[in-house]
Image 1 (cartoon, rainbow, N blue to C red):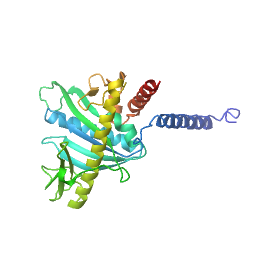
Image 2: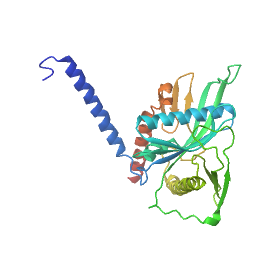
Image 3: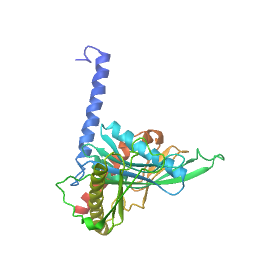
Image 4: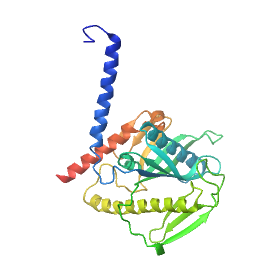
Length: 289
């Protein structure tokens, strides 16, 4: 009818709506690829600066900002569990909880080492620097999933948040650090004013990390039989390079290269995340044949 009446405004509106429907249909199609038992869960995401001092700490903060922007674009809720600022700039580490349908399913492929190549804003000689930061993603588990933790295996320390502290953390003497002695896993929570609440949150994070560790062991057994297209899952594996001079982002696991670094660092990660989900599912199906 719009064409018959030569209503250009209506046609433009209809085509725009059609494009929205196409994108929504594509998203639902990709969501069907998330077949893991815990893919639908919320996610904990940790960022840790690598060696390199201020450069690496600034890069860790850039990565956290990227994931925060991505969560915002998808209307996911982001809440801080722990944040430790760098001495000069950036972050030494941070843990956030990202809440929303399929948060873990979409983000699980982000675990690994992320490399940045750029001219350092902290170097008076304007030299090129390569910086590293690691990202760990694991599912939030609810009380329906039982993870056996022996209280005798836990060491708990309480402390005041060190350094200047970020805007998201509490400065009172209620921060909690829990060490799981058999595995060496250490989790911290600083954001609540109540020591009890911080301990409860830290225990939830620990349960999630122990579950993820068990899953990684299981996946390792599967990986021994087949080499997944999306990498080994080894947390020391360099998974992606962000190259400022070329405005390039390269995911080394699937050979994907995009020349839109600014957009990706501002949270437009879907093209990368979607490609990883498709590659992972393709590898699974190939293994089942």
